[in-house]
Image (cartoon, rainbow, N blue to C red; front, side, top):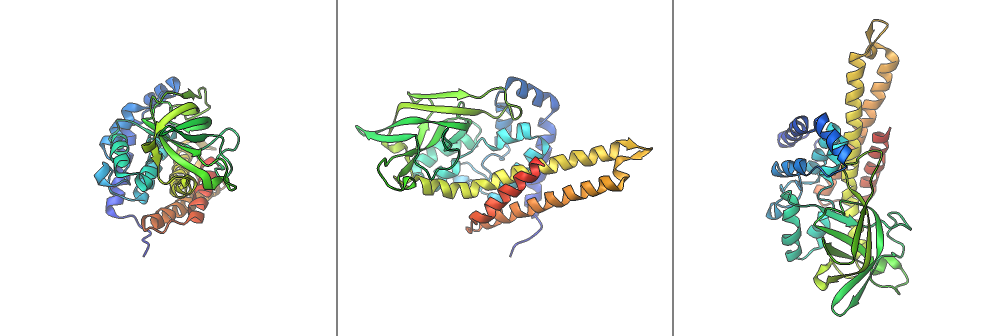
Length: 333
């Protein structure tokens, strides 16, 4: 039965993250990383040491052993405190679930623990210049087997952390003749420093400058056979399963962003005076604040329910998509 109240342990996790953010997410720190456009490594390592990175991953690989809901709570609180710093941190382990779900034991032991310990980052590359995130079409990035290795050619765009990650999980077209393109896609783990891989960082963004956004080009980049992640030609299905659950984190970011905006609005309404009284005493302003609070709570409940189902092995693609769309929309508003 679903509980509409968080457990004491879950509340403790939220409080711990909140205290971490209050201490570490200072205006000075935010300005420094926004101006330099560097990844906040110091904050990431501190967050990892407190168990916030990979909190939903198994303890045997260095994770916290909790569930998707706890990961949602961490994400919500970090983004609520400061999206400019929080979003880069929560995206540090992006894609690790693919390795956890479909990787060999050797891949899990090699790639997951360093990221969770704060010693590195992960990245996943799906989006291409010609088609956004519609991976059901024929991918331009290809992987062809030659002399016992896979040779990758093509390009990806808007890839988070690609310039500083330990590896990039890359979706490629491996069957170039199949009638339905998505039936011939595979995933590969491309390690940092692989010859033939060029990464270009996007600079001068309007916001989220500490979050690294990159384009990746593969020019005859060769990876070994053991770089294949999951089953050959099943990459589309693996990715789809992963995205159904990763949408929860995007939804949590939307909730955190919206709650943070509501916090600021309430603070301003209490402090700003108009006609000799606080702005918040004006009924028209109260109506707006009430509408904001309703939308935030609706987004939160939708996100929590989707995470709760995922933790019970009942991931609902439609519900997680609804949570992502609605929470992101509310966060933007």
